[in-house]
Image 1 (tube, rainbow, N blue to C red):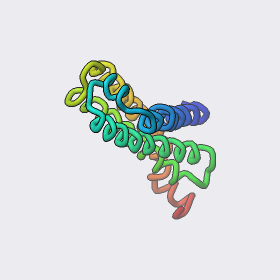
Image 2: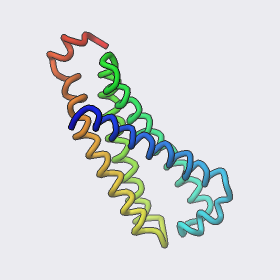
Image 3: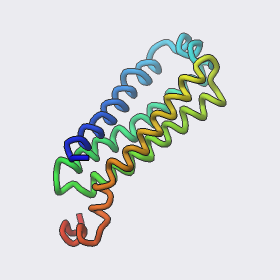
Image 4: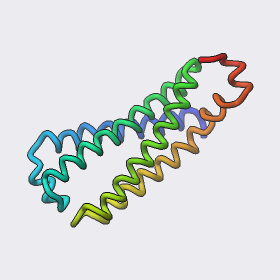
Amino acid sequence: MKQRGRIIFFAFIAILMLSEMIGSNLWSLIGPLEDTAKFMGVSVAEERVRLIILIILDAIPGIGALLAVQGYRRSGSRRTGRNGVIITTFGMLAYGSYQFTSAIIQLGDRQSFVMLVGVVYASLGVAAWFIGSDLRQEVASPDALAEHGDE
């Protein structure tokens, strides 16, 4: 995959996660939770905790994806990009795992949809690992360390 495609992928992940954090989860947390909790089949207190966890889990891969984009765009930021790929990957896996697990354990009517969301997001995390492999391997190789120095 060419560098432009990698930048587009990580920019997509950043936009997806950060817009979901603000436009969906944060907005739901600020607004009346009774309707959201009823829609999800949980109590208001459970939905509040669930939304706070999702906000944190949205921010982690969103910020990681921004770091990965920076690593691809600036040659001096390769180590930052490598860390961004790792943060994005594990953040997306954590997000997907949480959504899948909470669907099984906690949610009522929306269980199958939230399980699907969890699987899709975890799959995007695995894709981030492979798509960002050039950034991870380049920084980790001895030749790249000698070329870039200790950044």
